[in-house]
Length: 116
Image (cartoon, rainbow, N blue to C red; front, top):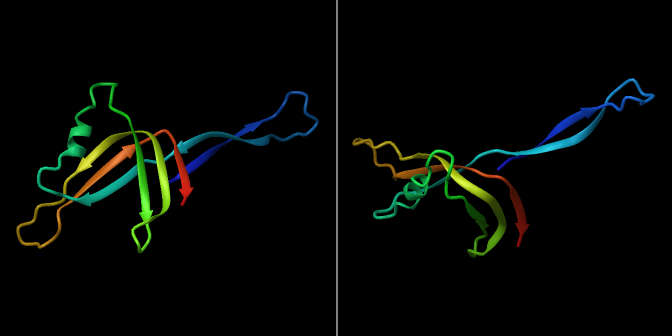
């Protein structure tokens, strides 16, 4: 989960300094990739992905928690206006004994961190 702030360079026309000043600009949030095991009858990721229709999509608030050894949240990330951009199922290999993993990539418009 990555947050980045662009740098904006500016020089006032009447500034006596022959250089630009740097100011914080717009924030950028990278996409988040979620992975989980596949379960029979659980199509929630696919159903959410199917809400995309041209320029409309069902946006959701998403909460991601890092749990400690007792199962209590240690850190919680709150994601604003998230929507799915990619869904990937695991490779189905007949000669492998791997767990089936679903991968969902979501785009969003904001991220906050809470320490519990």
